Length: 450
Image (cartoon, rainbow, N blue to C red; front, side, top):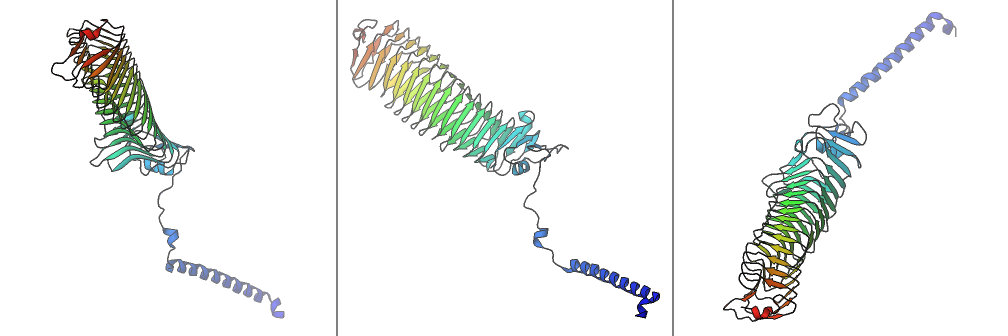
């Protein structure tokens, strides 16, 4: 016990204990260093992430800038679309971008600057911008597709797509906008080129408001879909609006210029057109193969073909439209039906109205100053004319050239001043023409059949 009271022994013991502690710590550190040096890394700790996760500098909005300015979140639109949360807005500055994978969250995509300066484009097969099952609004930018392989500028699949102030550009084999179910709205937007400017099917609902469709082989094609088209212009295509296979379209105002067929109701499709203008058309409105077209208060001018046509079981009905200076105003054939009510037909360059193997009813119609006959009737099923004026035409008022007998219902109408006569039967035809009706001028037109 006395040794424990010796101060030198106490100091020696303290130093020994301290030395042991320091040695133990050094060994532990060295051992740890040796273990890191020889151990295999954990695969989970070193694996690269599948994609970079970005966060916008300000909540709720992204800024995409091709030059990557200091306030921008990314230089790539595809990164912003991949990382944006539902409800956020992506602002895109001037530049050319690629969109990447389909958009599956509700977002708004807005260009900052002129349309020509903010461009989303692709030349690959498939769509430039695809929306799948989401509600997406696109504003103030250009979406383009071109390339050797067919593709689409925009594809919306069971989505709600709203395009406002957007320019769509497509190559000759491409589609501008393809709406597969869901809904698509184009307001103050344009679609240029493409095999189809807008293709809507599978129950899609489409709305066009103050839009412009130009240079597409078919401007708008509806198949099993519906469309409301307001104040929209179609120009320089083969077919402006095609409504096919139980599709429906309601067109109000707007124009169809330089189209080979401006509006085509085909295979059971139904089109209603009111207040629209049709300058320089080849065919204005055509109903074909059980299609039905209703036209009201439209203006047709300078057409190289019929303004109104019905073929192969189609039905075209007009009320109150004017047809000026066209080659032919109206034509019906192939078991079709043509109805004209209060239609004004003036200065046709050839025969104004032609009916062959079809039925026609004219009420309150005015046919004047045609370069040929006012009305030409072939082998018609039924023709009724009431309260109409057929006058001052260079040919006959009514010219009959059928090989089948026809009882023409003529009631309360005026046939006067026609250079070729009031009613003329073409020589050599086997069909007999008879007149039924009263209150006509001349009073007994049957007696004037030549």
